[in-house]
Amino acid sequence: MAALKNIIFDLGGVLIDIDYQRTEDAFIRLGYDNFHAMYSQFTADEVFRKLETGMISNEDFYRVISRAHAGDINEEEIRAAWNSMLLDWRKDSLDFLEKISSRYRIFLLSNTNAIHSEEFHRTLKVQTGRDSIDPLFTKAYWSHKINLRKPDADVFEFVTKDSGILPEETLLVDDSENNIKKAQELGFKTKLLLPGEKVENLKYEVF
Image (cartoon, rainbow, N blue to C red; front, side, top):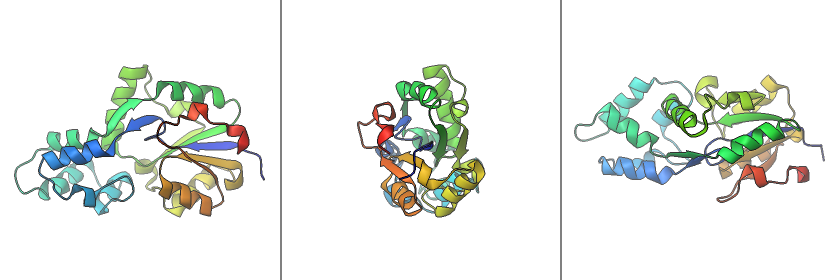
């Protein structure tokens, strides 16, 4: 088995707490009875996929979501509902990344979007004093900036080629079974981070 040299960390559910149910509940309160069918942690319809891969503007996203509503709804209501899944940063986990970076090359690979990015950078500054988490990594890959998203194979292929790493020497730490499964198929070492587990408590030497 190849020695571990690199670690790719997910963001939501790994470095920041996420509650998808809060966003679903918020949209239901706004009158979107079918929101679960539109978006969840594991599936997303076309407009959400386009938002996460930077293929649709924030304004167009708000426009599409607004049209799906039977009544009147404004951009601020949609933004607040969409951002309600974002909870607290795991400050101990962020501090841990600074320590582990002396042992491994570490990367971030996150499915996110410009709306969420603006909000969690705001809370990052408030909660930790940091302007960005990008400096914690050898490189950070954001789906809406690289126009690729997990669990598609091409995003993993892009990251390995761009960073010059090998899958068999690389561990993916992610809270999504779909992402873990695809990474395993492509030859990565993987760790499905379960509820209650924290990256600072994992035994990386066993991978």
